[in-house]
Image (cartoon, rainbow over all chains, first blue to last red; front, side):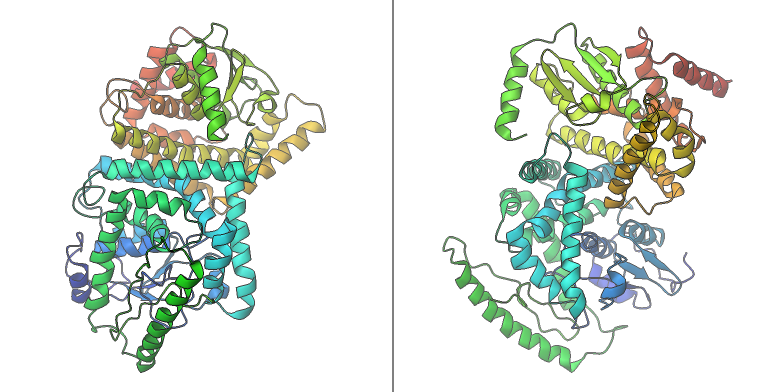
Length: 350
Length: 276
């Protein structure tokens, strides 16, 4: 029992209905300060939300969030504009009254110790499997995801960089994306670029092959069940979701890995299920109890964003000029008082 | 290698049977080889023993430079050279021997995941201990790594390698870890392996697979290598089924070979001491 937390009625060990758990434990005062990963998918509060994509410090954000949702830990998500501090890689950060926990693995451990445990029903062996699969994801899938977001020139310059740079304060917007891109390339080359692969192209070919194999393995493991260990989501589901969801949803010019993922229908179904049950639900179901009062400006901004996003979507479709791609429907913004959901192409300049 | 080149190599591999004079190259056992390289080499030896393929171990001071990928061990079979456990397993499979054929898709996925776990945690922890922990670096690693070379080459090579490893650690986020955190990771990894193994003789019940070879290589080396402190081996010793697993593989597959005479003695001595 952590002294910093208000006592909750009972350990929320299984998240049957996260929205309900959320409403019940309004006395919980933890906040998850986070760089929001994808505007199209996740909530954030303050309008000037800086964000990051899967990469140097972003890939663990959706996982922490998803895990918190699965386990029913009531969290308030705050997006901070502390890009200067955050650029050291200190997000996501979980703060309670007395504690500050950084780094995703520690955050998950912390939540687990507070009995917000999504793995309550897992056997010891399944816990071991979780660790093993997480290692597999980090070794095989992560290099290719980093490459897709940060190294592949088309993707980086048309999607990631403008998106990222639009959300962080001026001088850093020139430096930080470049730094993250170099960091990603560095990591890929240091861990995978050893002889006999001498050319970057060969390294790329190898990492994409590994990533596709990893996706196939995940698909085999998931099979037809809803989550990886039966009917309730667990840490592993959070991790896999954290990796797959950005890959699945963000629209890129070069879509090699995304195409492969889309062919694995059970993984796509897995992502969609989680999005629909845990993230959509939150949009409508957040109770005002314990939350900040609504800002009228937020509402106006939401409407403006809606209009802008529709306009940009049309322009973007025209630009791409690919008639075989069906016009994809981006998740629409819901005008709920407490949240806004913004569009991934919101700031993309034509 | 591109897909075409890989297919080509597999075809060549499949054409010839396993020769009698296949050799495995590693660094000098007594003076030069380090913990992580020894573990890798032992894993490959265990794997080949499990496949019943004869292999001769040859120690060379420049094994690292002879290897096509810069990593030891590597095997020289016919007129092909293959290094590291992953490619060696594929090469052996192309020749028609495989330990994991009996597994279904889900089990194969699990096996690959656990192999990545060992590589991700155990191997990285070994590298960290060897190259980033000041005490070990000063006392053991530098002396051993440069031992075959004259001054000043021994210092230069050792520092160069240390710089390389530290750069890699930083890139994957282990640069800021303390030794205690690394040992905790090792503990977590061993706990996962122990839970997965349970009471079975091997990880996939009756038959050993490459996962068993890899785990044996690492755990046996950790248990039998004397470092500046015993903390690393203590972490492994907490799990009795892992110890039994190592002993079982040693007895089945290495009985007739002089594995590493003094280390085997050390292992048995230790077991004897704990049993009484």
